[in-house]
Length: 506
Image: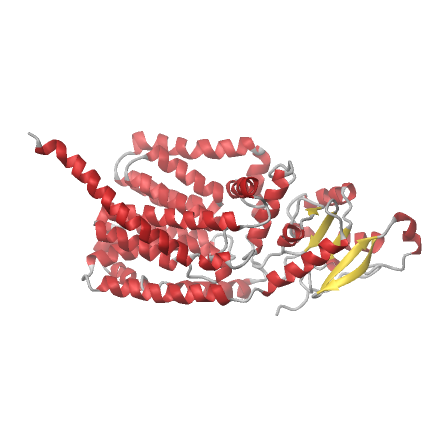
């Protein structure tokens, strides 16, 4: 009579002891793998974009109105909150939060694996995920950007679905979507688990409500029309790769090869499991998760390296499931191979040069020297971090030339120009420059297809009101000329100059 009541207590003690042993190891591993992230003030333009957005929001800006990007609101808000608490001069608080996000993802994956395949599988899943999580170019793997903060929500969605908590699963899918749109791909394996458990009648309404409530709330808090446009309907031109097919294909193959090298310990057991139809069907939800994540990576046809981070959680769980079915001696081999690859990627992160960051820092120094803190400036380029590094306010809501020309790192020129801009962007841009004329314009195009010489509106603005005052690493600085001096001004840099042809791709 006394034994039965003690079973739950023993289970609780066992569970507590398991996590008390595992969590410190995972925490140390998460910190070690993210060490390179702390050695650079910035890793990529996405971090710079988010930092500038956060400052503008703190100054009273409104998301999707005075501050715009093709992204949902959750991460800009997180940056804003971190800046409010710790100051906006450093991204170190976001680096710490990124470590915690990676640790949380590993813990959720470990919990999923333990529930399905036992204690050892839980340890394996958590360790494998963290080892492979840095297996991309350092600027993709070490940056505190969208995918890193999206992954805990995707893992949480599957964790909740595995336990039949459909409302919470829907909310986690919504949070993943509100961090980055492609996070919504996790809805496919969640829906499969719902179907597999026969909970459609009761679970489907809870899943739908859990998803809809946060998304509708975010739309209402920002601006419903703006939210819909900037997160869903306004990216059709950006998703096209017309004329840049080989450029994009090369990036896709390169990043796939990099992740495959980082996953050298995971892929053999996964491929072996794939050969066995019975094993594959037993974990169909994981294959659906991987397939949905692969579709998310391919969506938009840009194949940037950080997109591939979405593949790592399902890969880690698939490898864990496969290793569970293989002889015990295969597990140390997989972990050792992953650890060796991880060490190489950490070394790459510590030693990798960042020439674009050095350029942005020099440009920001020149910009800060030539302007006052209250001056508005325009940096015409794709490196918004210059605003943040210089401590200057942008003259427009469009922080990069990409939104006004459709240029991005994903294409090399054919569909770049004013007519390919986000719908309605140029009239807004002209109004904002008229209302907040920049004291300094920085042409940071450096021969790229979005150079001002190819853009009539910007070409006329520079020719009429600005004069060249300096150059920094190929970037050209133009100062606004006082109205009384314009009549004596010699023809500007773009006066009567026809648009230049696009520069050849390097």
